[in-house]
Image 1 (cartoon, each protein chain N blue to C red):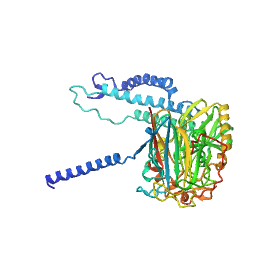
Image 2 (image 1 turned 90 degrees about the vertical axis):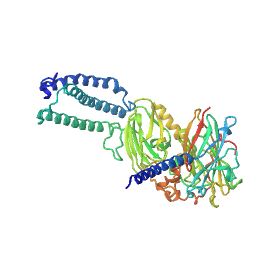
Image 3 (image 1 turned 135 degrees about the horizontal axis):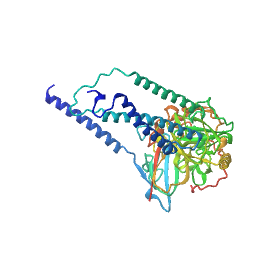
Image 4 (image 1 turned 30 degrees about the vertical axis):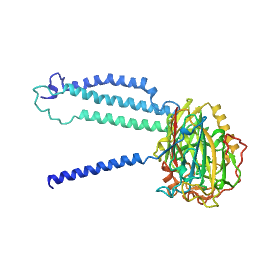
Length: 320
Length: 241
């Protein structure tokens, strides 16, 4: 028995129309649901322009994918119900010889989707200046703003530290960022490969030793964000995370100036190397020694000079 | 092959696999590092924890690896039996920890000199003093917030609990004299370092580690003891009320 002659089935030309009419309201409903209900809550949120752009991209992808998925489900359900085998129907189905219209529709639709996504993806990568991803040492997509806060992110087993070259090269284990200012991240590593993933900022850039990997983001919401390493980097990779904060510009400036003054006072600012895009993991130039060889000798060549800085701190060290 | 031979072969193969599984499980369970319990040693909201770091480690199968040791609560630091080769210890929550570290290893420059800064201690400082041998001080006690491991080569290792914001450079001794060669160290030049911090009000496991690349013989010094709990990495278990 042929499909079109089956009990309860319509003539061949009507099947497509039926499927379309079932699919269309479902697809429209799904897309409305995605846009109105899901989109505002999609990760990574809207803490920066980059995060918001990624959220929009995910919503668009979901709105494109939902109709395709629904079409497949509707077609399956329709086929199962309308073209199911009925009692007493033992005949083979009709031979299939291809259908030019279906094939052309399929090729056209998939080509439009894929090429459309290619154009969309490229535009969404270029316009937001790299979309929060690392662009390497010489980024070709830059934000319009000429005023940028530079933050160097240094990965090492197993912590991220942050240097602020515009504040005397201060280095901290905390990441504070000002609201509304374009941030230019310079991501690098002191040892193995790490990856700087500031989730809510929509920034993710590999931290490779000897490489300056630049990424951009502009905070547009106050609050806390999470920084994780997203490259398996050894024993404590899973524990290599901390939290940063987006604060008001005034709070940020006060924090940075206070940190800079404190680090100058206790001598650590002087002890840090000059700011550089990368640091050689095998050599400490200030020592003129090969670190690997030194590190491997378990301190057997150690020496000590007692001219240590005696700070004015009279701290809370318990009595020796 | 006859049926009995096949059955025997199958059983033997099964037994070997089962034995292997049992061995792996038993090795994992039995091989767990001991945890030195400081929770009962706390008094008046204070607990004294004592560690040492050694230049080599002939008490283990990795004699050329640097290692931390944990002292039993209240023991004599100059008795070998006082020390446990582990990097696991437990302390009570919401308690002041007075940490003492005997640094027997010589200097190794930190790759990132930010680790020369004392961070997260009470008062933002630590004290240290060098000794030529047990209880024979070489110089005065220094109280400082920075111990520059580059300009003085004064840092042997670090002790850090990153999630508590605690980063401490551990001073090295005057290594013009021969460093201790038998672990745990109870003789030879050392530095005596002290600082305090508070444990959080809640329980939990907090990893601690050294930030000096002291994995000798491994690329960039990042392997071996740096990657192994029981040597230069460990956990502090904070036990809630």
